[in-house]
Image (tube, rainbow, N blue to C red):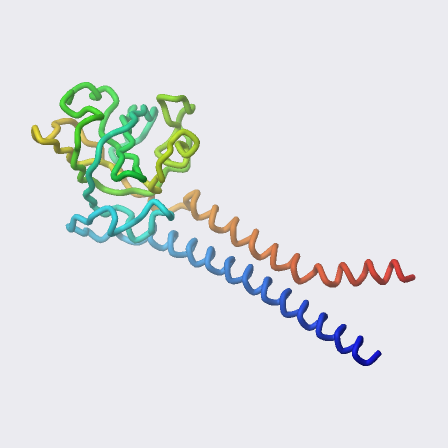
Length: 242
């Protein structure tokens, strides 16, 4: 009898530890998302620091995760060849003008690719030397993915500059964010076309901020459920016993 009670106490103690551990994990995940939201909000409201360096793409980000906030607006260099081309309608540049843009998917190695904003859609035929078979060296500014749709998605058109739209049709690991090209070079020289200036969002509350906040709510709600579950089970057992 005494042994049974001891085992029962050990089980209760182990259950309590498991519940507290799970709750702690969910709470810490919520805190992590909250820190990410604060970091994103602070970076977008801060005055931009003019960094003149050109970074290798792999030094700032990878296709396995989201684009780090510290990489926003930095100049990067990479190379590869284009494997797909898309029209991005109704886009707004830093000058406030609305235009259709040409966006291409650049394969940077055997497994990964990144979206590149090449220029205006109306100028897509101005550089016939750059075709999908050619190796091209890209320099440009890296930006976070857009979250606001500006058109419908079709096989040849994307509603926003966001690689997540292509995950179902691409076999490659896709980088988060996109590069707004300032130069494209092949073995025959540099491509000459109008480049597009993009302004990082200032003030307000971007969509990614609310996405992080929503994860905070979800993780903390999960923590509450975990803590409440043992009491709910005990209440059911008492109801059955009575």
